[in-house]
Length: 477
Image (cartoon, rainbow, N blue to C red; front, side, top):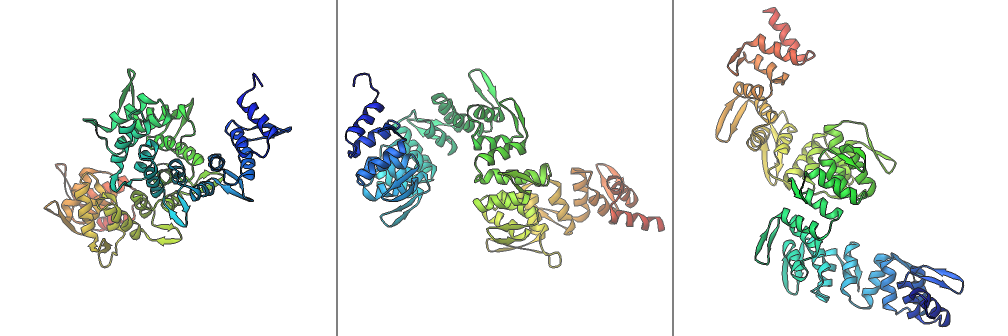
């Protein structure tokens, strides 16, 4: 048998002793082969091994690693195959793989991904991928001690400081102290790149939001995402991130924001951020009827609804759905006000949501609604929005429609607010019209009487109905 490959040797062993389960396991480990004139894939080799010996743990584990297959008369998917392994005996890598598939049922208990990673580390606490996985799951208890996500990544680095995923995870957690030195996020991402020039490394480097120098060349965040996609054109996260930066050239093709989000979703249609971002893009940036993913068309609102159906914790998506006058998430209808409430319950300092919540309030009673047990009037909502975002004219305009209010300890009456709005944005036709109704005022050192204000409103919007009516009234005077 001199000169035969390992694959050929194990194939020959299977021919000579076809009932030996270990021979078939070894054949599968070497990629499969030809036995008795028939070609066997690695999966089929493991199936043969398990038919000979259903207790062959290694063959069952290997079957799980190739996505599952035939076992004891049933077809098992990868998750079920890992469950079957763990029902036979605990194993660190098996627990970790089950966690990566979303968890599963072992010995009658449903285990979440985090529990699987914890079980993995209980079996072998020096296993670096186990610590990385637990960190990605938010941390958890190992050996009677609670570890947060950052501590998990540091634990992984303590075992192997050349683990790129651990450096990336530490960077995503805001950096941290390791071996007597503090590492900022960008330093973590750079270390990740030095260890492994990969799409993952470039993508994380881009998320730092800063220009970075690599090998004497300066890269913007968008350029980092482009580098990631050069290395892996199917990186759905990098496509979504590039979309957030306006798109760019990838492998010789110019991609818009919308096309980047679309490509991200074509690779992975369960990406909530991509759905949320493309929904906002369609609704507010580049209006269009629909975007097509997998042959199915989605409006901007439907994209946002889909994002929230996958991950209801995306506060910005709730705000966007509120601006879009509400929608349906997981079969439940939400009006605009309810959407803004959901956003504010998740993010109490969301400046745009406070403005939207106030605008969606009851115009007769002046009540906007209740957030986290406290009732707010529309006026109070606009006051909060102005305090949080004093450079945005819209909440100031809305506060003026309430007759004025107090912002950061300063009281504003209606006229002063309309003047403030116009000084911030002089193309607000409503503000000019409303200033005219209250006899005009001084804007940037120049006095505008009623007629001049109405003129400005109609100059900006010749079809402004109320300004047209006011102009007709002026003509009668």
